[in-house]
Length: 327
Ligand code: AHM
Ligand code: MG
Image (tube, rainbow, N blue to C red; front, top):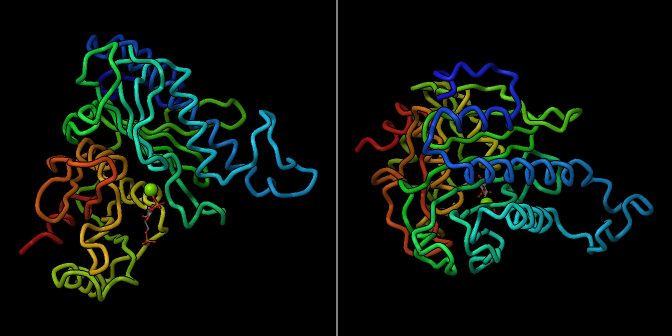
């Protein structure tokens, strides 16, 4: 772990990856390169987001960008940028994105990895200058190297993730990820264009006093969830909900809290997608001492059946997740 490696806060992402790679012989150079590619994609998307408000100003950016592409909505732009960065990197053979129905073959059939991602999450916040995020999940492919990736590669189940993380475009931009040991956070130094290790070996508080849920759906939740929310209020807990999963998760990870997206009458399976929203955050929760459940068992144990399937999720501080699940 970063703790054991005595990696000082302040090292760059590149150096961190290099040093942790030499300490863990199983961490192949390819995975290191893939993580760097994700860092690069994050920086590119960060740049697009930062000037988003200017895009429609006449004469500012015009209607076409430098590549001659039409200006598109930010989530589409992020999708294109991310896919391009992973294609150019060469380590990934296929990508599953929230923005595309089917898997995207990168053309690098010799790549050992596949990535499931939500390139820009928090749709209601994208155009209004509120925090948004990118979520990613990485697997080693199970189909033979050199062949085209298939559904089987993407439906391995959450426990088979070899790395997962997110990029939060907030008051500062952060990359948080785990390769299966601890969870580390890097803050983008905009002047250097580098992610710098700022949150080393993040350990989530076992308990907390923040609950994050869309209470507008209260009457549509199961009685057990309603009871839990009533208890939170009776105890005077803080209600905090951005409506951007990455931001809400990140706050609770650092401060202690629970994020809930329960099943509703309208959506019995909840809203969030298993492969690129629930699994990666559940991975990070478990690696940082927290917990993630769908109301029946650990999120990571759900057997996936389709690319874009949904799942209810209760994720965050262990004691709080246990509490909401208590019969
Ligand atoms: P999206 O993938 O369309 O952006 O939806 C996911 C988002 C999450 O970021 C957020 O936690 C949730 O949807 C909010 O949903 P709601 O508006 O129903 O509370
Ligand atoms: Mg999403």
